[in-house]
Length: 270
Image (tube, rainbow, N blue to C red; front, side):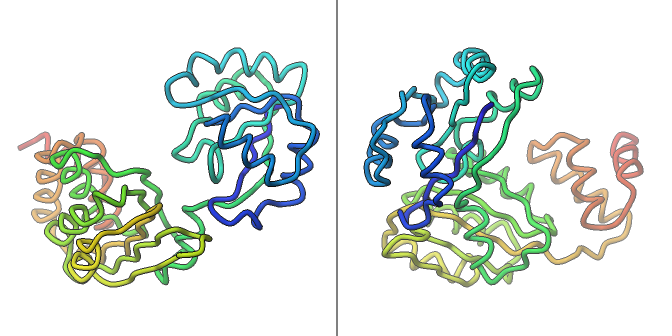
């Protein structure tokens, strides 16, 4: 089978006994960085080192078939540098192929930066969406943020520390001024920090310089109270920003309670 193993996101003490046993019994570990995984095995006291194979975004499609075939005969442990593999880390193509080929996939659950940040953010946790890393290019990032302007669920995002100030400034410009945000930094590590406020309030802090791994948790947008004409205008704005009509209609429908089909057809009729 294929075993997805969650590894610590910062604090080594978060490694479970089951994770350590899994490593001790493994013969093959597919990992994002062999050096990082070898170091982790040493810190966890794993003496009988399994064979390590590098698996990253540049070769995972190529290696997927080989790894899945290997898993027919023996267990293959799949890990990323930190957290759960497949969550903004290598792993998805292998899991998808294994499911298609009937190869068993299981998990040794472990820490997740997404869930950890959401839980400590102080923002609603009953419904949320995870959208991974924000686009690097300014224009693409602005378009992406506009697509989330009316998202009613709490949003979890990853961002690079050197782009954080610019991203918060874009959020302050594009989104409702009162929308609450929590920026979680260095989760589970010595200098863990959570800064809360609106995007505009957090910009000066970010401009001073921020280091470490960053997770941004954003409050869902307040429900929109609009008539049909206003809803059609919202669809048109999203389409103009680059979103597909089907997705734009679905997003506006989710925030207004209107029919997705009617919004879609109404835009085409213009």
